[in-house]
Length: 356
Length: 156
Image (cartoon, rainbow over all chains, first blue to last red):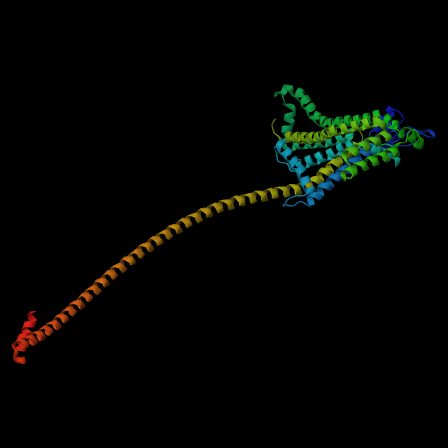
C-alpha cells in the first residue's frame, strides 16, 4: 500500500503531503541531483523535485496538482449543471435535472433563510461554493494511494488530489469571498462602513482606535476562519486516511502468498500490481453478487479469502478502518461544504445590512 | 503548505466559475423551477375552481330536478283531477241519457197501454154489441146504436 519510493514512515507521510509544484528557483540555489550538487546560474522555472526545492521557490510557485484538480472539478460542476440547465423544462423533471434541481432548491432555501437583501449574485455564488467545495472534498474518499501511485507509474513524482487540503485553495476562495464582502460593504453602506468600523461597539470619538482595532480584527477573522476551517478539517481527515493506510501497509506483505510470492515477483517494495489484481478480483466478486450470480455469504467468504491470500488480516483491518473513516468522512465533507456556503452567505448578508 | 501563486490562481478560477454559474446555470434552472411552480399552482387553482364549478352545477341540477319533480307532480295532480272530472261528467251524461231513455220507454209503454185500452174498448164495444144483439135477438140498428156503444166505450 505504501507505494514505491518512500522507504520510511516519515517519508511516506511527507511524500503524501507534498504538492506537485511548478515554480521559479532562485539563482544560486543548490540542487541535489544524481550527478551531485548543481548550482543554478539564473532564475529557473521548473517542476520542483522534493520539498526543499518547493520551499525554495517561495511565493513564485504554483501547485499544479491542486489547480488542476480544482479546475477540473469546477469544470465538472459547470458541465453537469449546464447540461441539466439545457434540459430544464417546466414539465416534470427527470434524471439528472431532478437531481440538480434538488441541489439548487436546497441552496436556494439556505440562501433565502440567511440572506435578507436582494442580490442576484448570492445564490449562484452559494451554489458554486457548495458543489465545488463538496467535489473537492469528495476527492478525499478516493483511496489515498490510488491516484498518486498510478500517476507515479506514469512518471509524476508528487500528487495531492484533494485540493481542499491545500491552504492556497481554501484561502483563495475565502479571499474571494472577502473581496466581495468589502465590495458590498462599501457599495451598500458607503461612509456607513467607516462609521461601523470606528464607532462600534463604543459609540464615542475617544474610542475610535479601540473600535477600529476590534472591528478590523473581527473583519479579518472572517476570511481566515472561513478558509482555515475548511483546510483544517480536510487536512486532518486526509491525515487520518494516510495514517490508517500506513499503519496497515505493513500487513500487506503478510498474506499467505503475497508475503513470499509478491516479494519474489516484484522485489520487496513494489506490490502495487499484485494489489491491483486483488482489487480487480474483489471487485469482480462484488459485481457477480450484484448480478445475482453469487450469494452474499459466498461473496463475503470469497472476499475474505482473497484478502487473506493477498494481504492478510492486517490489510483487512486497515481496509475496514479506511472504510469506516470514509463513511464518517462523508458527513464531514458535506458538512464542511455546507458550512463554507452558509458562512459566505451570512458574511455577505451582514455586508448588506445597514445596522447590526 | 506554502502560500504561493496558487492562492491567486484559485481566486481567479473561483471568480470564473461563479460567473459561469451566474450567467448560464442558476437563472435557467431557477426560472424553469419557478415557472413550473407557477404552473402547478395554477393547475391546483384550476382544479379547485373546477371543483367549485362542479358543486354549483350539481346544486343547480338538483334544483332543476326538484322543480321538474314538482312540475310533474302538479301535472299528474291536474290530470287526475281532470280524469275524475271527465268520469263525473260521463256519469252525469249517462244518468241523464238513462233518464231520457227511461222516460221514452215509459212514454212508449203508456202509448202502448193507451192503444191497447183503445183496442180493448173497441173490442169490448164490439163484444157488447154482439152480446146485446145476441140477447135481444133482434136486429138492432147498427148505425143507430153504434154511437151509443162508442160513448159507452169511452167511459171505460
